[in-house]
Image (cartoon, rainbow, N blue to C red; front, side):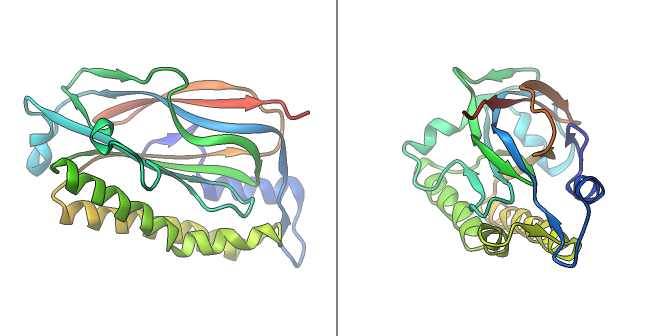
Length: 233
């Protein structure tokens, strides 16, 4: 599993406890001094796949991207595409192996710039669509609803009033995020859509924040992610 910046949330949680200490309440969540955002700049399909998913690399490959990203500020996860997005057909991109898709402007906004608490975690899934336009829009709504109604969203909401993280709660959150991914996978399978690749990783809220562009390669796909930093006056 490719890790953005090579940082797993569990390792980052241990680092945070070591850096800021731990009391009976847990670790007080640090808040970034600057606003931090995350954008997807490009997707590259590297090679064809073998087995039942090999049809993704036939003459016409209907590729789309899903993601949910969150920190510990108490806000719900940011889902891409957002629920109710207009013209869902425009989100599906025909691609071939070796082709790179570059997004115009600032790229696809995975997380809008804001001050983050604890650390920022993202899960980016690349898929191939087997849907007509009407069914694809319904699929996107179902995926967004999974996140809205998830235990992950309920767990994150508590940090709005209690900015402390215990190892037990951190484990619950990682488990809840894994359940969201599992539920997405079942919905995709039920709609005959194929999973291509999954990219995951986390970014610290503490310490100096520097904007960066990072390219991450997996067996079948490669992505370019940009971390944006906006000074807060």
